[in-house]
Length: 191
Image 1 (cartoon, rainbow, N blue to C red):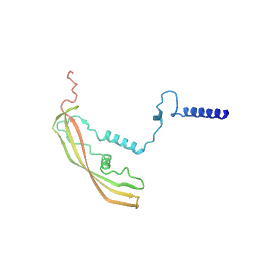
Image 2 (image 1 turned 90 degrees about the vertical axis):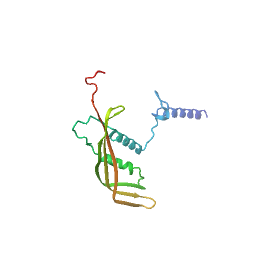
Image 3 (image 1 turned 135 degrees about the vertical axis):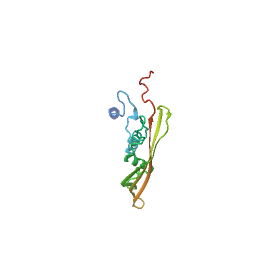
Image 4 (image 1 turned 45 degrees about the vertical axis):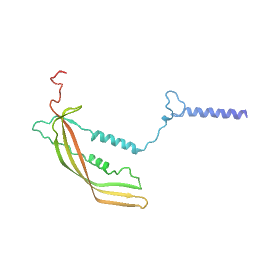
């Protein structure tokens, strides 16, 4: 009986020691954050969504501040929307991502994009907080997207729907500021 109790106690000590040496879990030297140290798996969908949000914020959601419009110079917008920007705007309007594989999937093939400038004008100068005197330059584009849309439905009756002549129209605004007056107020003027 005594030998069984000793072997049980020795086994319990061995288990505690092995838990203490198992890396992130258990008793360790130094800082210990407990159950927060156990990694939690996250779906790649959420990571991809965060990366897309950052990409759009960095590329398309900011309003740049340009130098002043020169006298006699062109006051036209020089940057039509990129194909990436048009496809991302279409994805916001009619999403294809997030379908269920083998149950409901949507594909867009043979994509052709036609971009038309429908308006290009500059507002009169006004004071904008954090910028100063500036003019807002508007450029409005109509983007027509022609594509073939294939929808695959896998349940309850598997079938494929193909729309050969799918057309979507997306309107994209490219606005930016032009500074007015002395761009560098520090030159020749005391503080």
